[in-house]
Picture: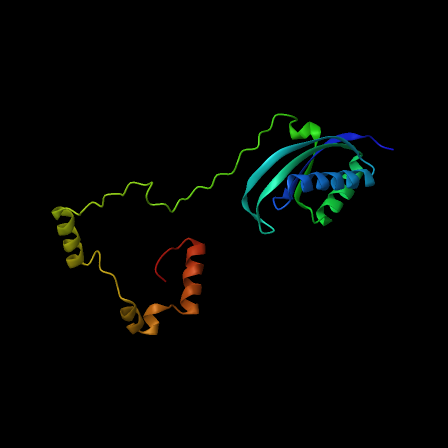
Length: 183
């Protein structure tokens, strides 16, 4: 028999179970723990909390923290058995010394709605000044802000749109040799 270590097992039971049923599930988990050769030290019900996302169509669950003493080799067996259990939605097994002991606090999940427009003040849209409008008009006239339409691009001959493989090879060779001229 190897070194026995203490582990924390946190598991979640569906909120569809009553408090009495949760007690039965705790008994079943205790039986599973003993079946793999581990010893149950303590069990704490942490309460019923809302999930951040649905788990197996459940939005809430009963959180139960259990302290277990077992060999490190039996952790995988217990993990597999709990994964197969229909009563346990999720579980997590950590070494007690790494888990942080009693220094944890579960906080109820609160949903934040970012789409709610009632909470946010409306941004005021700034109207362009006469100077801005004049500058844009000047840019358009001078061709700085001219945008070609897709039809104008399609009307160009194929020679103007793409370069041939030979021209590309020449340009690459010239660039690699350091002679950056239009080949």
